[in-house]
Length: 85
Length: 255
Image (cartoon, rainbow over all chains, first blue to last red; front, side, top):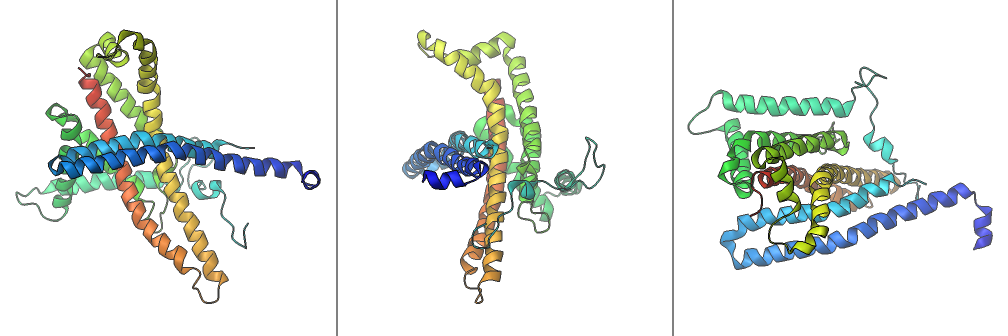
């Protein structure tokens, strides 16, 4: 392993590690919002099924909840592009 | 490069060469042209729709009226109530403009969402930031606005040490940041997704003799194009509804 690494150009290693870092940043940032959006939408569906006459209000609030939760994942997405070796 | 498949670097997919006024701060490229075109389209659309108003709407007036009603009933009444009806024209303009800017993503020949460059989302988010702070200070007074923002009632007082700075940072700094980044990142992600599958389809189409290999990514590309129409609409809707929520929150502090 070390032997192989020693033969490489150090720039390649940095480049590869940067790519790995980008993947980890976005993947990590997507975990929480993924769970969060699931909870938001799941509960909204429960509410709509229980009270179909309130569906319009629940839908508006659901989109708001999704928008706030999703922002964290999108910060991660943008950060993944900003990271450079 | 994987198996003869080469994805273009990010800079090739969102940076366009300057068309006019090269090397000045007022460079005009494809994105700027599309933005101007969006302004013209939205302006012309509502001008034509309101030119000859009929009691029973037909054609373009019908579309414009349903857009107005969507913003008024679906956004303003749901978030701000009747006292926010005066903001309907502003929110309608924001909604239409953001939607037209986004929909360029899937128009053949253009295929570049204007909001995939962060300049326009940042400008609009700053405008919204100015408006909701102005409304809040005007309605509640400078002291009252910050007091209602940082010290929401119904919280045990030791928690204010924690709540006050969080509320201040989230209202003043995080709101415009997340508003602009949300729109920008969604459109950029959609743009890159479409590019990835288009590149994949063409590469597989030219690589395999039977063209079978390209079928799956091409079908997905068609599906994703439909999905991006939904995303364009949804992002315009979310941008508008968050604007309405911020202005509504500044008008009516939580009791």
